[in-house]
Length: 460
Image 1: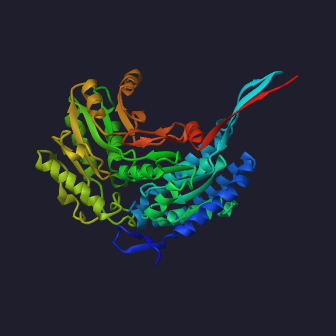
Image 2: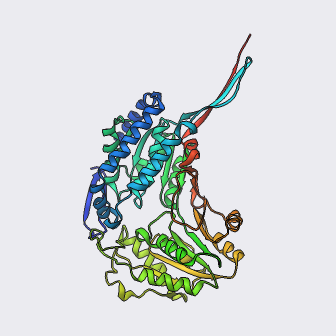
Image 3: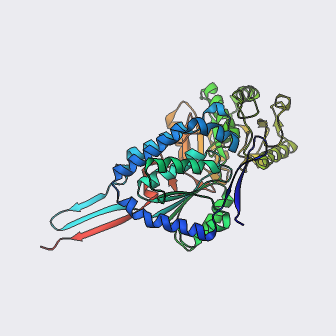
């Protein structure tokens, strides 16, 4: 009997969806079909590939009324926020807009003696392993540019969000993208690793845990398969003494708590200049205390359950350990009687330090520690005191100051006066245990293709 993937709904703990996994033989055949179809797809004009991808994107938009409650059932995000189509469309549209320039040949010389240039060719078959927290937006980051560049794509979505891959496949196939060129598959870990080790794919993009990234690297060891890995994060925010306090509090706390804290670039630790610390904390507690934790299908709910009860239990453990070590929890539990299982109340901690797991390890939940700092140097040292490096948010009225701070930060993206946002025109990348590679922007296309050089000598 085949293994299966099951989505246990965080709303009530029941099985919301179940799908059988492909056997090793079935999976190998699926990849073979993708490889056989890829050359014909890559031979189509670029404009045609762009048009078909964007039709698929529009098809997802037409499904949004069905998708929003589906997401609430699968991973717990409240329906009041309307799903992901805005960011999904923005990212795909930008990558479509820049495709011609990003994929254009680089001309070196075209003289009577030589013609020299560099072209970008599709890798071939790209495996996209997508996460559950923003299942549409994270998938489209790679799916759209990979298809536009001429690759065939095999999508393996997270078991928590199995219906997302099916929706994407239906939308793109209805747009006219051949079924073998874009395939949604259900695979267990062993089959996935075996395929990677057997060089079934020419590029693998994975978004998920550090442990998952290590498993992908181990499977690919010695194959020379290209990898893009976006893994963990512990993203910091720094509020300097000249910051706009109200905007900083609103943005950073939303960045810490939105989607129940389950955001790749969510804010997980905040450092505030000591002159603003008390006011910042007071405002932050007031915001969080006004949240409503509950069933994500109810329009009044502002904070839904975490995707799984075990994720909530991890955050509870980190929080309790911090309190036991001297941290102070400021949000009143009496305001959140629904706190149980996957439903986790939000929490703000002060009197924290970096000896505590909650300030050091990824939480991926609605908790944030806030520390006072004396100056930029102390803030920079604390922001860099992490195994991760995805984004950092700097709050100041001085752009030059933000740039100077950013130059000293070990991170993939530096924000000034904003947080928790992915700009598709900029490379989405990280360092340290956050992983390697880069998505979106022109660089995203470079990672989803390989360069080929032509050195043509003309004999007279």
